[in-house]
Length: 374
Image (spheres, rainbow, N blue to C red):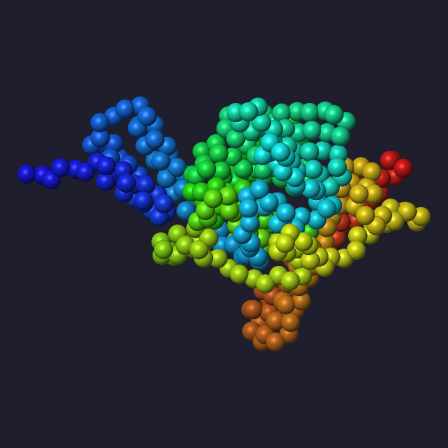
């Protein structure tokens, strides 16, 4: 005689498997539970939600990013924004009395703000002249959307939501505005380990220093969160698929990550900046030199300036790469290897020249925009 199935234990096991990041096992246990339990609407909806979250999380586990953590600090959820060392010329983050967060651009001419109607938070764009627009439904998906941050390109928007198919409470998402179609793209998960089966909040990035911050309440109690400061890299480094599941799970849970000391950049400790940046200086013409980014009169100038800085950083990295190749070329005797290195050096020199040409064009464009505003 077959042993009766303990359906209640199946449900407990399914939830335990989900919390342990064994998402494939979660799906199997939910299916087995549904095959043996007496159905009702509430129960079926709860099962469907857990199964959907497990399936979404399984997809994320296929591309876990290897993150380098520079600093971390525990704090109250309501004080976490004080721990973000965002430079003032990048903008300002502020928590409103309603619980919504407002991001103001470095120029102070535009805000992305989370406002509530008493039921849920939605994201709006507001301008210094009083103009106000609610972001479209592709972003405001019918649940809570909060914790906005916009990159200096004016198009890339990070935010947190408890909708859009999250795997926990709040998840981190990113969307981009297309100037040609005048539409936002479908929000996409930032992925693991930034997202978890708990609440993950407020992604902000300093593009000049290549550092970012996000907050999470995973493994915390009450209103406590941990604010992580991490290294932003141009090319994401994903965990190899052949790694053991335990290593992948530990990385996804933020129980395993790379650590790097970072004394020269912004530090989250006490929310104060430890900056070691070059002084801002941009020559507009023979008689006018800007010493503060807020002196730019045209918003397009600001975007072009950050694009220029990004290219200059790329040139610096390419020069370092080329110097290494040249040093290697001097000590290699194998003619086949030398020929390959010679070609790589030539290609790198060509790429550097193209980048420098783009920088020169951007400088001319910025000066033109500013000249028209003088």
